[in-house]
Image (cartoon, rainbow, N blue to C red; front, side, top):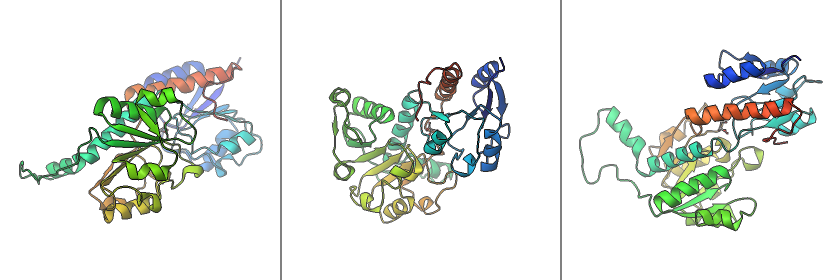
Length: 323
Ligand code: DGY
């Protein structure tokens, strides 16, 4: 039997590419650049599976094809707001993602951001590299203590819970959680978390707020000017979820007028382009979408995609089907 034809849109870890090559007839996008809608339309006429990432916008223009050959989009990543799932379903295309395997690494990075912004680590490094450090003094780059403070988590799924675990057990933080659906009491109890009924009630209570909800239209600008106004003037906002969750112009204003303590972002609306107003603030830490960027997570994500493909082509239900 002919092997399924699979298009991989970016370069993946070598071990995963090797395994893909054993199992499937693989086309790699050797340029390692985001693919364009017209390339997707052509690919959907040729490949049984497309393996996209967050940089591939699989929306209406990419899917304007009558009878696609493609039967599955096996996404490399947990977030899939770059895929128009409804449209894919309309074409009978199965969509899968890679949950679980990157939760710990993404929570590690959210902790990194929280510590960096609270302890002004980015500012310190910039100063040192610029040769501007004049030595120790009691008032130099004084930040905020993290241990024992209150952390609000918006989106208490797998990554949010991992963040809570680190913050509560490692740093003695009090955890307040907002989640669209009720969280089981035993899950909350693991990190002594309290579920709060609304984001508006959660924001004024927190020293740090970390976003772990999905992106997409439903959560676009969930954190807007009004909600930034509900944060304490010394509170910090952390985002490792998706850029569109924050209204970045409103955040730039809040940072400029110092109505919040600071922010730390790993994801940006329209990335890799960065809203220039954000760069005006020293109290903002920025990283280039590194949440899952560890050898372990990136390999595990690839092998999880392969699990989904093997299930699908063997006629089984893929474990991570999202539609
Ligand atoms: C994820 O898995 O969602 C990462 O952000 C990369 O897409």
